[in-house]
Length: 269
Image 1 (cartoon, helix red, strand yellow):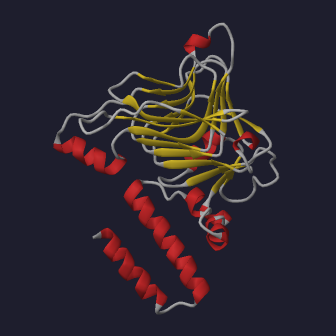
Image 2 (cartoon, helix red, strand yellow):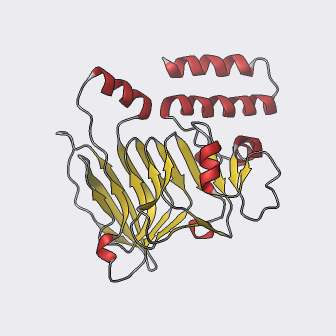
Image 3 (cartoon, one colour):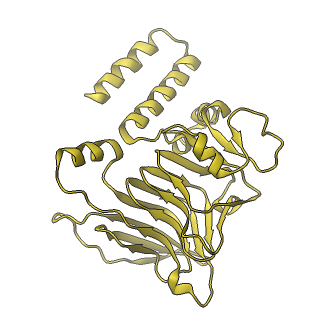
């Protein structure tokens, strides 16, 4: 029903707008629909569709920015720290973190649907560091996404997942090597599966079923790649081995009777 309504809206727009205006309107409409359906507009993936979509989705007015240089702090929507940007963001916003500088991240709680994206050409260009004495760099209490970022934890975890759908795409998660390495873990999930009640069904429809999806991400250091302290479990693991790194794909979600366990494999490139 939702997609039928979307199609009728797009058809109505096409009959009244010129090609450039129509493309811009379709992009905004689809981003809005994705925000309604999934909680996040995901401008990062929208910008990868084609050159025109990249131009439209990269409009500075559609993003919040973190810029430590100070040269653009007078502009609206530009902040010096990730914590300030998260505090000012509205649900569904995308925060672009500038490359070329080290950004400190200490137990930053994300309690609204947000997408954090690195501004460099690769994850190594945008680095978030969590020092010793903190549990994690980012703590997700609801649906969220991070992409194109490197997150380093000196002790503790890079990501702490409490609730909601968390997507980690094209990132690097690193735990530094030291004698207390057994206390480190790139991803820790404490999410619980809610019992089947009307209130839990409403929460699930708003935030989505709690899970973690890791896509094309390098994971280095730590005792394990992921630790689950709640009722979720590691599933559907894929690993690609290259000369320089290991790239992981896996889900941390509720185990169902229909799920089929797949043995991890390594494919040498």
